[in-house]
Image (tube, rainbow, N blue to C red; front, side, top):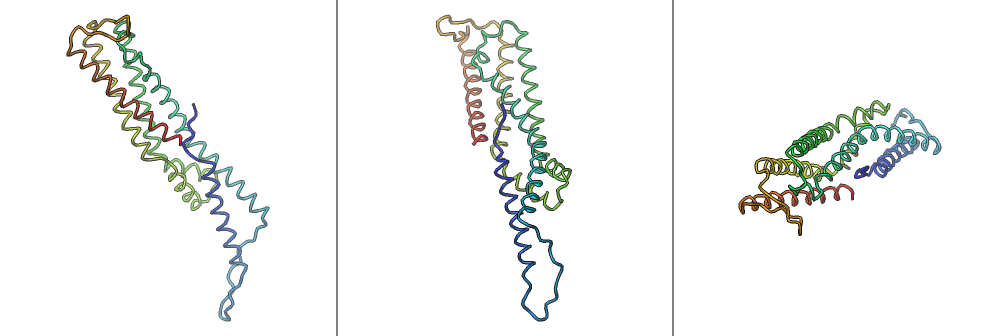
Length: 235
């Protein structure tokens, strides 16, 4: 799944419109001499035809797109991978101890959780490095440093930072809660049986049943909150 929460095309158009208008405005001002006797003629700004301006803007747009595809593409790829892993954990059977045939299954899912945790840490770093990575990518596309800085700043403003941070915090909680559930399964292995009618695990001890239900509720609540954050990123 390709996430598209960054309005790149619209943003690039807006940035280029501003830069193009500024260049044309500077050109027009340069072409109108000041009407003061003491004024000395300054250097004349290069004049561009509309066709030349269009070509310049098109080339700049292509370079910006290549730079953003490189940096944001990496982020979007990691976001998609993490969301896919998260969706596996959201399946109902992950919260049903009867779906685990042996303790080996617990080990397998512990490994999956660790992989998700490592991926989330890597994604956090990509976001933290986005400022520097975008700046470098734009300059490598032979974009003037001053213009590159302005474009980079506009691109960074488009990031839904509050949602990104909220989702990251929730994902850490979700992973931790799942680890607690797996520890519960491992520690209390064999203390439940399946209710053939409802499919709900039945525990031999009421206290264990209460602990399981609390863990399950926490995981479901956090998972729903993460789903909401993903929806916000796609708006």
